[in-house]
Image (cartoon, rainbow, N blue to C red; front, side, top):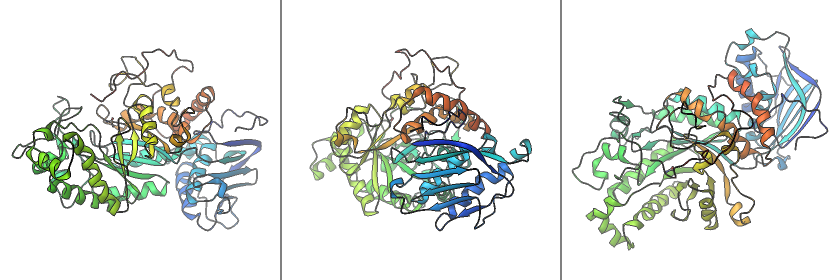
Length: 529
Ligand code: ACM
C-alpha cells in the first residue's frame, strides 16, 4: 500500500506500483563521492547498477566497502520471496536488501526510476545535467510481485528483429520488472534459430520472397552465439528467455527447408508469404519425431531455462486426413482419428523434453486440448485459462482481448495497420489474470500473464515501440501489483512517459485520461486471420 500519511509526491510515479511505499522527508544525492558497496552475492547486481547509471550520470560509482549505496543479500529476509526487495533511501545512505539476487535486480530498477529521468538516458545525458549531483527522494519501499511469470512474447519469425533490438527490448522489460522474454522463433513465414544438424532451416526457411503481396523479400536468422549472448544478457537483468519452436502446425518454413518432413512427398513449398493459418503441417512419421528431438536438443543447449514452448496452436488436420502415413500412425498408436494426432504429437515430443529436464509450454484455445504435462498459455478467452487450470495445468494468461498488442490502440484510421479490432490502454490494464470469482484451485495454477507482440504488421523497432508502449506498462503493473487503481496508474504513467522518452522509446502518446469506451473498442476477431 502507498502510505496514506505520506506526502503525495506525484513525481515518484513508479511503474509497476510497489507493494508498500512510504515517502520520507529529504533526499539522498548521488554524486562523484558516492561509492557502491556490494555484500557477498550482490556483486552482479551492483555491477549492473553501475553499468546502467554511469553512462548517463557520468558518475563512476566505485566499489567501496564504506559506499553510501549498499546492496546486500539477506537470505533471512525470506518474506521478500524470490523477487522481493526492501529499499530504504535516507539523506546519508541508500540500502537495498533482498533474499535473492533477483530481488536486488528488481530493486535497482526502482532506484533508477527514483532518479531524474535523465539518469536513464543513454550515454552523454550528463552534459545536459547540472554537476551538483543526482537527487533521490527519501523513501522506504517493501515490494514483491503478485505473479512469478510476467512476460512479453516477441514474434521474430514474421518479421526478424536483429539481436541488438531484442537486447534493447530486454532492457525495457527489466525496467518494468517483467521477467520473461518469450521468443517466437519459428513459424510458417520464417525460421530464425540455427540448428547445426539442419542448416537449411535458416538458409531456406529464413527467407521468404515477400510478405502479403508487398513484393519485398524478407530474411534473417540469429547465430547460435547471438542467441547464447542474448540469454546471458537477459539473465544478467533477471529476464529468462523462453524459446518457442512451433509444431506440429505453423511449420511451413521448416517444410520448405526439408519437404520430407511434411505430408505431401514430392511437393516443394516455399516459406509462406501470407498471414493466417496455413494448412501445411508436420507429418507424423518417425523421421519428423527424430527431427523435432534433434532440434530440441540444440534448443536446450542454447536456452538453459526450464521451459520450452512447443506452440501447438492452429494445426489443421486436413493433410493428415489425406495422408497414408498419418493413417498408419493412427492405427499403430491406437488413436481415434486424425484429430487425435495433435495431442499425440505434442505428448511424444514433450516426453523427449522431459528427458532433457525441460517443461513443455503450449498455446491453448479451449483449455482442454493440451496433454497433461503442458503449462498452458491461454490465448483465446480468460475462461479457457480457467478450464485448463481446473484440468490441472499451470496456466499463463494471454487472452487476446487484453494482451495482444498487435491490435491498434484506437479506432482512429491513422493508427498503424494491425489486426481487426482495438485494444486500448485501459483494456490491457483491466486484464485480471486470476479473477476473484475463480475457484481457488483454478487461481492457484495461474503463474502469471504476458503481452503478445505479433509482427505481421510491425517490422521496425519504432513500430514495435509504438505497439508496446505504453500498453506494456499497463501489463507490467497488473502482473506485479494486486492493487487496481486506474486513475493512480494514469497519474504514474504520465510521469513515467518522461522516463520512456529519455530512453528513446517511441511509444504512442498518452490518450485522454477519460476516454469514451464503446463496445467498438474491443478486438472483433477471435482468430488471427
Ligand atoms: C495464437 O494466437 N494462435 C496463439
